[in-house]
Image (cartoon, rainbow over all chains, first blue to last red; front, top):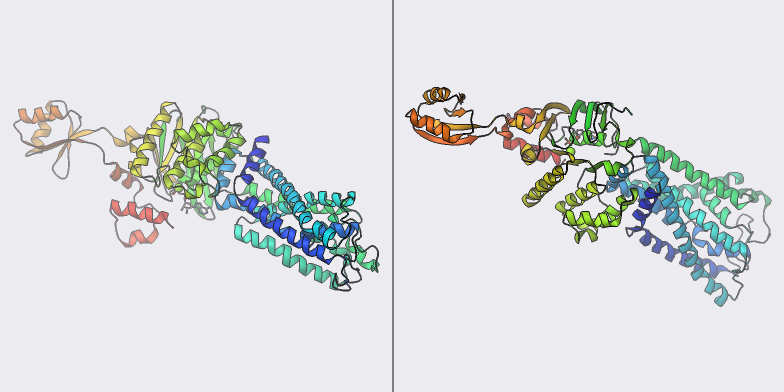
Length: 280
Length: 330
Ligand SMILES: Nc1ncnc2c1ncn2[C@@H]1O[C@H](COP(=O)(O)OP(=O)(O)O)[C@@H](O)[C@H]1O
Ligand SMILES: [Mg+2]
């Protein structure tokens, strides 16, 4: 098992994919964080009345810091990178037929897939660190130098949020891995994973909001991720409609558990099918 | 699942192996053994079911029924797969963005094989420098060599090679022959597939020939070739046959009037003819025409060629070989 894990980790880091995607993600994370930081202290931010949720950027708070330093994730943009990475890591084994050599060296396919999961989660951790560093590098100078506001970097809750990012990245990489195991065609799997994240999630958000099914909103993976990362109310109690509070879990770890359950569930279904398929 | 009793270490045993893809039977109730310490050629036209059989042997494809074991065990049950069986299935199984050396290291990790062994094999297969470049740019010959290096990583007793000569230039094929002989001299069991008998005839000890997923012939190469003889042309073959019989040599008359004596002693045939006062127009060693033999064993049975082969009438051997290669491009 140790050998199989070492093999999978080496696989990830011996092609250019991980740093190519990582670089793209870091750049985007820095840009989005800069954009969010630029909103701090502006009245126009939050585009007026967001269903009675108030303006999270009115002035810096712990919650605001959590949003700004995870801006790419909250915007559901940078998570597409670990998602794509997860998809490509498994589908490229089928595309280039290296899966044959993999299963020959480790005939027990469950061992292979568990090892891959560990490797995939390990890359998730690397991405989380990269993402946090890039976001801070983008946002902190603007907040402290341009806006002249407190960066809240002395707050444990802010650092906890950045640490929780590790779970977010591991989970989203695993989502991609699960989709890739279900759909071995690389292009189809990537399009479906990205499409589901962008289009389906946004559609569900709109439908649930229109129908006022606020309690259903909190089960959407993107919202769960935000729920996990933003633990402090950034609006500091400005005119919040109590009905909309139902769209969040009370504790970050509840959201984390649901997310982990989703991704592991998807991966287990994919793994089950993969262990039974012929490798031609 | 079954641990077949009576199989030795390194013996491959295929029993009643069948694989259906939908209602198409790719491998049909196939049974044969591969003996340890010998090179066995696994032959059949393209589409005969060789790759499917080997993939079932290696636990990659699930048999519809039957078993395929190595030393009495299913591949998936081998405690040290890389140290027991080395396999090279297709020449294209590399990630184009990963170097050949890294590809081997990835496999070596799973069996805790040190990097030094990887470099040793790269030397042995003659690609130490090239293996540090990304595999995307490798020639077919380099891919085959890298595939062999991967198969040998764990110093296995059994080697399973699927069409290792495909895409090799004549120089590469020569190298491969020598390499396989070298491995066999170390007592390894080698199962090597090919769609061309001539390609492996000089290398293999045993042959297993299949067509349409079914066994058509299994035995030693020597049996397949039959006893060699001497082909002699003379003015009166019947008289020479009689003279040879007196010298205790049997012979058969061919349609074209040539006589084939069942001896390798050309000098004896010449002497007998001289004593009988018969002129000799031609005298040469005669071996079985393997190409003809192989074709007749698998003839007209290539389902992959379909109606096209029928439409052009009885194909010549040359056509058949070209047709098969064409079918492979599908
Ligand atoms: N996964 C598959 N699905 C359907 N047919 C297949 C599959 N794999 C192989 N076949 C068919 O089975 C036959 C045997 O193929 P194969 O074992 O590759 O032959 P060979 O290696 O002798 O050329 C071919 O007709 C091929 O098209
Ligand atoms: Mg084949």
